[in-house]
View 1: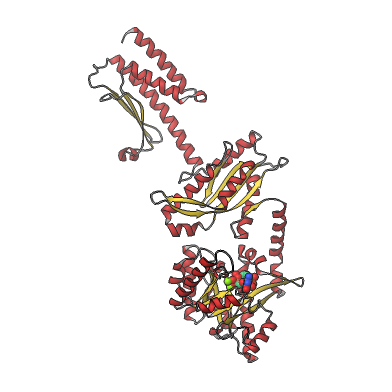
View 2: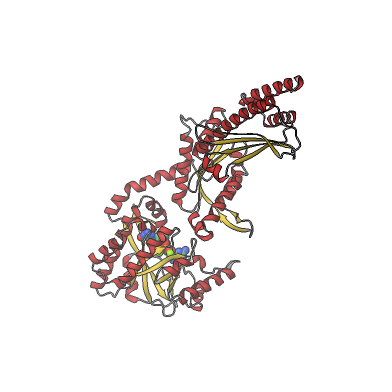
Length: 561
Ligand code: C2E
Ligand code: MG
Ligand code: MG
């Protein structure tokens, strides 16, 4: 090596060391240029480094391979180094030269050896830092996690940038159904693409992280809230690029916009505000978007109050069974009725939609449903003893009961205790969205079936109806939701077509059909045309108080047909 080369080497090597030991001012491109200069000085044609998290990865060749420099002539190995770190990571570096390159002197090899060692220890430190970052701030699917979010929030707070930011917690709607419909693998892709879609509207100070499962959290400038809300309300997401297949994804969300005068001690308090709104959005169960503001706080107070008074209200018999007749459209005869719950509170009638979703949140609904079943059994036995010739009464059972392993026994205990003949009881259940529930639902329906207790699928067509649900579970009755019933609007053609096919299919499968929400004489005609025998709806009667229903039982027939 001549003096010039030696001097140049010393200069480049020192520069390299100072770059590597000054991470604050590290500029990647400068470093790459520096390595290229070193390679040129030593006639190195190609430099390759390899990083493996452990020796298994090395054996399987599944690490990261970086080509640091390559002029296209690297054919002969000049020097190769391999180091194993304390954490068992393996880092390898290899330098190549052209095939016709004269042999290197001992001094040159010694200098290259020093360079490569320095480089490997630098890379090893960087990669390990990246691995630690990955483990701490990302989940196993590669999404930034809650730690990442908290770190970002801390940064915004420190910079005084957190005010007027919106914190959004969202939960994907019916994602278990999406998984079931398109398969788990495509489901994962859909979730990732939905995430990327939202990420694309974030600004530099925004972030989006997964909190686990299908729960995510966003922080974004509130000026940009609209664009996120559009996506949360629902948008088509491609999950199979080859076939351009799409699935609609939407979410329930809780939002908290941090007011300029908001005082807090910990970042968790901001998160908590959005969390409360999100819980509220879920209670509403419509996948709505709820802001944590005064209106929500008012509503929340009402909910807490309702939960507080529920046990006493139940004890005081404030809940009443109202009966809505089911009518044979060919004869006008009453062939059954549905028991619908009403809460008589301070002499006012509270409709079920105002309390059932709330009671479903903490399982209080189970107490109410059993109470309703018991009330219906008692009414039935009274009608029998008074010789009123009762009809079969259906009772709604919330899906929440399915987590109770003894649900069937509980139902039977109530029926047996009241000694009700089984043919007078029908249980209405709604569609389920997840596999575990589906199995429990099937088991329950089969057990009731054996006892001669009829079961119906309620609100068919409302949610994500699955044909599996009616094929695999031995239901007796399909209750077609009123949304299937054509009304006079521009979609009525499609609706009538769907209605026609749903009824035809159910009849083919041997199911009895009831159409709910029948309000007009024209609609009764549609039922007749499609051979749906039974109607339930305001056209005949609203849900009636028990004494009014008993009057109907006397007459047993409508002459409006
Ligand atoms: P559902 O089981 O589908 O009951 C039918 C609903 O449609 C009732 O609402 C009924 O009043 C309404 N309806 C009947 N005919 C018509 C019509 O012609 N037009 C319109 N627009 N609506 C009609 P309701 O009584 O408000 O009950 C709402 C829901 O609350 C029920 O839907 C059921 O899911 C739930 N529910 C009611 N009582 C109970 C109960 O005791 N336990 C449980 N778990 N859920 C209940
Ligand atoms: Mg029902
Ligand atoms: Mg219904």
